[in-house]
Image 1 (tube, rainbow over the protein chains, first blue to last red):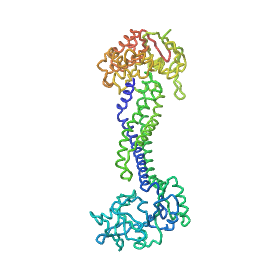
Image 2: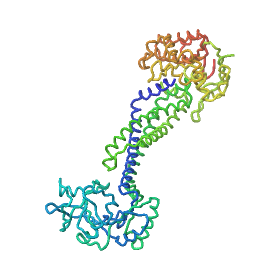
Image 3: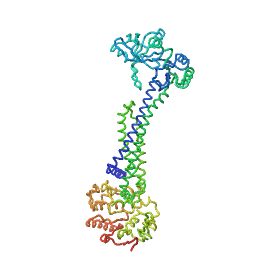
Image 4: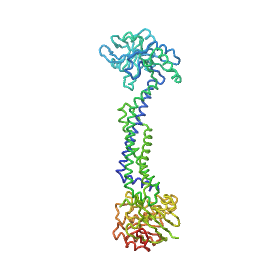
Length: 396
Length: 228
């Protein structure tokens, strides 16, 4: 019996190929854009989490100036005295600070544009730069104002390709520095800054050789021992800073802030896609609905016949809803394939990692079935309420 | 007790303010096993009468006893069940579903029987087997997998008759069953009805054609909504 029922149902969809196709296409576009948007949002979240991981979930990062206002790292509102105050907080470690200047460095023969950082002790530890060759800074390096540098691979490979760079010289300004260490490759920041084209030298040396700092710093960073104390420590840090600074002179960056900022960035993108996919689904729903209205109209006599051979109103209603359901399910399959295909081609263009979440398929299925049933409900109801005799008379 | 008993059946169609009384008080009894022709000119109300007999339409007033049941008291769903169980329709325009094969058209009504009755009715033979058997008997054995548009008019009507028989109904109601057929095919169709009647089926044919009506045992003439 089920066999006859399914055969009856599917035959009608196959027989009316064009109608089925148009109804299908309407929903397919909606489904594929839903799959795309859910994947895109998943991808963005994944990226946000990656950034937070890179930043360190236990880290507190204070930058000079307000976020989003001008280039970061250039202003130097923070002071060494702030660092000293913060160092009194309990439950923190790897407290460090730094200033940066993008500038030319060279090995006499070749110049290279690079970012030179004057850093406090523990900088490498705090930022998780791992030494690959040579060594990191020692207390003596800082105390004795040694002209030593820890550099990234892009720097060492540029000046001394194929050679051991340890002990070799680079010029920062006119001052020669000895390379004491090279850190492991870190790649790029999500914003595209090259983390391997950096030169770190002791803060005091930076002050003497590169640029006067007047005891000011651009960034302060430390890590928290016990994450449960995190919020408390951030609060105390803010209080310390507010003693000497106006609120807009600094920004405390925490994973929560990062997440907020990133979601602000992706919000416009999500909104655009959201509107697009909703529109596509709504349009698809209307297309489906009108196709079913036309179809029910054309098939009036068939509905009349089914009533004459014993179909109840409910049976007619259910049948037309099922026709729509079958179309919706096909649309989910087709639309998901297209949607996931779009993920492959579009997300990389938007700098969003390529992900294929099952969630997208689930959401698309729910949407599609909902739209399919809703769109077909009104024509189906109309069909079920047709008077059988009148319906039969529509065929001459 | 008569299989069908109509008492003072009236049917009024309303169109805006305009009321047309199509049936003006019909009293009619049809016994089980009769072969009845309802005759009348077009617009006489004979088709409306047939649809009321088939429980496909409700009269405006009056009483209708089918197999002793007062069917006008039943709900729409119950009437649908009654149609599936008691009545087989044969129409002038065949009404074969274009996307189903001949056999699937024939067993279509089985889809709508309530499941308990269906099990009872097809406990010895599956609907497919029974459908094939009926089609074979009506000379359609070689056409069971054809689509309706591959059939001649006479073949279409034989398919429709097979469909009317699939649920073993008490009554066959035919509305101008030869109206779209040539004389030869029309005669063949009427002979099928005669044979079915001989086997005990109650047959009601609505027609304006005296030649068709001549196959019946009883002719009921209807004019202007009344039995003459």
